[in-house]
Image (cartoon, rainbow over all chains, first blue to last red; front, top):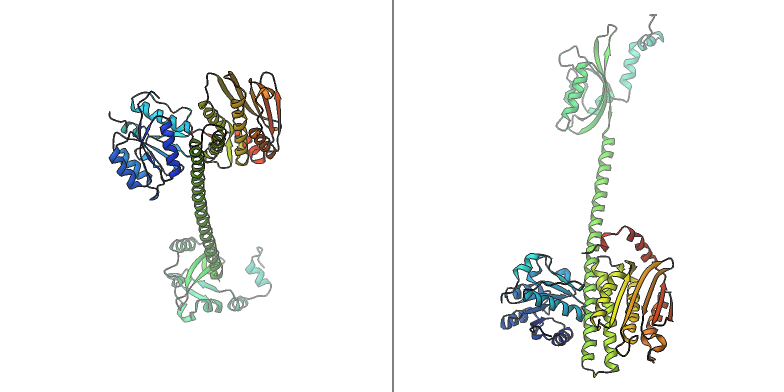
Length: 151
Length: 383
């Protein structure tokens, strides 16, 4: 992988999913900076690590608090938040600052494609999600503009 | 005898005198009243006993008074005006009014009022016959109450049904969410184990199972995202599936193309069909092109008279040329699925390559949706 590795925070309460995702991210040449299972842990880890990307599940140990987590993490202009959930219907219209959602169950290809999209966008390149049925962008262009990272 | 016969002259002719009418009217069970418009304020000049018992007054209490004495707070002023207008115009009228008895109780008084003329044509009296219509009104009110009650109950039941539907939707959503999450856990579990297994047959088997679960997961995701949980678009699946397949390939060597009609199939058929398509295509990718041999795989699916016809072709080494696979799990899986779908499958060596043709009958739900396909419903509209 020629691109700079992304530093990724995984917010996921299901340990097996988190662990496998970590392996997959490693295969793709990225770095997992932390795994959080609860909202408090996720927000604290976000502050401590200021990740490039955060994958956020909606349902965490302390309930459907992923939306709140996304809002808190995307307050850091450096962090691009992507939901990763089987419960996309719970995502609010403004996507809580996230750029999109990867639908569970996902395939490795969709995760790789979503990360390529995020990396391109962070690099200021034209990014596309064509052919990625399992990755849906936040519909409002407003959220995309708001969360362009500052380098 | 006059030349013109009138009821009055006829009565006289029959020898009936005025006294007979007075006696008949007085004894009549129909309440009656006579007023004199030539006197000031058109007072009551005669009533029968039935009138007195209907209103509860004594003759002395009504004699010389205007009939409006029977009116009260609930009497409709517009009806009174119509009655007054008819009387002033000397027209007969039929009308229903709320009237009050002496004791203050009210009743619906249905009356006819008609002018009585003398020989010269002058109005000498107004004659009115009455009927207590309270029973009829009570029925009407009872009917209205019953109707309102019925409407209230229907409203309640509709609310109950709506609540039940909301509950069902929430439950479906919850189950859908759990199934998806579990599929993800199962897939993660398989892949984790595969990662920790040395390269070889066991690892390939684990990865193969993870891919099959992936194919079923895609079906599940698509079924629940279209908003129609009963049907599934085969083309949408094929597009996603081919992307997945190609992602794991050296595309310079192996080309995969799919021509799938937009065919709505029932949820019951979706998983077996997806699994079958997955097996056949991966089989071709794995076994048709050994030793870096370049090649092409074509997948087609169309609706035919017999149902759904699928064709998977490759220009690889063919069935005979491939390394014999002792387990042959992929092939037997396909045959099991085709049997489940009550279809037929034909494997043939076409030199070069392999050709697999499958025809499966479509079930009722799929056929039904095939009709709606011609006029696409919103459920297939792309987001």
